[in-house]
Image (cartoon, rainbow, N blue to C red):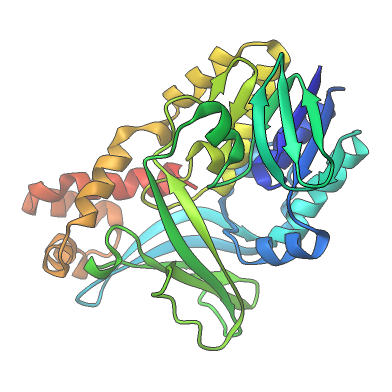
Length: 345
């Protein structure tokens, strides 16, 4: 059984490693050159819950460059809400290159090329820019927001897609994830995260301040998932499946976990189990989308009112209980925040 994994990001690498380490014939096709790969992934989400290191067998804590114990939500009106977390920031490029090396050591073959089209033909014909057409028995789309596998085989789109600009700024950070909310972001936010001794900052494309940026990049984050992630030996993982959370847009851990679950389904020949896993996963809950749709319409006045209680009680749990009693119409907001930062990254 010949398996093609399209995309060598976290989802693609973890899928490939899990399969090749168990003796399967895996070929990974990725569009980036060696230098392009490093540039792209150097300004791409690197925040991850420490749950990942307990949940996934191949990733190494030696690539953690920041330990993060809190998220600060900054609301209009100068109100900060503090949420305790158990998280980290990894040095993303070395982190991924380590997975890639482990894949190679396990026998995985890497091809640097663009996948132009995929079609079913007693398996799958994968048409590439330089290597012509290759045939595989199984195909796994880990090729990001604009997945060719999703387009050609599944013919679906995630519920939403947001363009973001992310940059590394040569200034110290305060060691926490800081998120700025308000009506101008329309359901999105601006962030200020640790990145070693520097700061990772970004927001919706066109709103990020690139002053003093050492490097920057733009990308699309899909969210809201797709109806089907497994169909007759074709699979979707991570961003290609629209798995990033609609509120936090966290996607690193779920990308690798989905790769693991997808690989298990391929090994056991039970693609329905993969679909069932995602349907039961808290991250596929429609509650997140409902919360997002409501936030998109909020005015600064509503943000201020919803956060009013937290001026005295900055802890999300204590303040949340009081706020729920005082402003019951914002219950979805409080519950949504708790669910998001507990499960989504």
